[in-house]
Amino acid sequence: MTGLKGKVALITGASRGIGEATAYALAKEGVSVMLAARSHGACETIAETLRAEGYQAEAVACDVADFQGVDAAVNRTVARFGHLDILINNAGVIDPIGPLSETNPDSWANCVTIDLVGAYHVIRASLSHMTAARGGVIVNVSSGAAHRPLEGWSAYCAAKAGLAMLTRSIALELGEAGIRVYGFGPGTVDTDMQGAIRASGINPISQMKREDHASPAVPAQAIAWLCSDEAADLAGQELSIRDEDLRRRVGLPT
Image 1 (cartoon, rainbow, N blue to C red):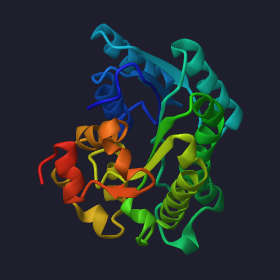
Image 2: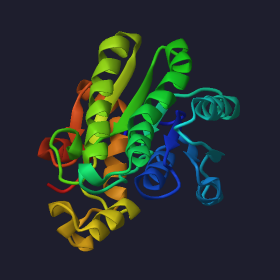
Image 3: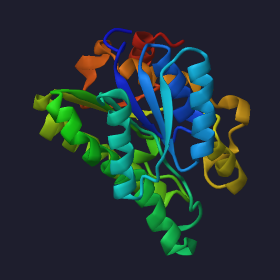
Image 4: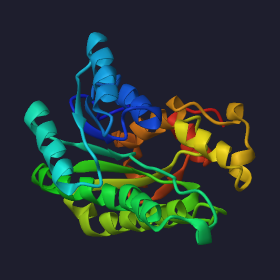
């Protein structure tokens, strides 16, 4: 991958799953990574492991629902590494899962806040650094749920659909400023979220076997590739791990 060595990335939801795997994938390409999540202890453990392997990594506690906390995490990243080039908006929740008529209003709103407003918070807090540097890359971790409704996932589908439009808005407003943005659907991945989905028993996704889901390392490889110069022609698009041409370019089996 070209154009990654020496870059600095802030990754939300980095304490496990796709976020953790993406931290490893970027670090191995020479990117300094700041792992951010509410679970600071888990992020610090990952960062310590990365440092022990010779990579540049730090951890910061961050609740994406809190703009002031996000702003502090962004500023800490810049203070530690000198600049900020890459944002991976990975933090997300799927609860509440269930019929719309039975959902808890506070839980429903919390899902939208974390999955959509949280991504906005991270982007908003980072823009001054990226525009000053005349460039940057943003990867919003999207979902097939952004484009088709799934029973029991009303909050998650609505939030991801909003995130897809936010991606398009960024491309429209900031593309000429050198900021590349991508929406990326990782497919079904073997994470804790999939465990909650299986437990719900609602909609066909819950019926999938654990072994049918991809390892987090698979979408992480694609996310790291999107941050490289090789993906520049795809900027502004909503992409899916299932796209065979994308998989070929990333180097994944088709």
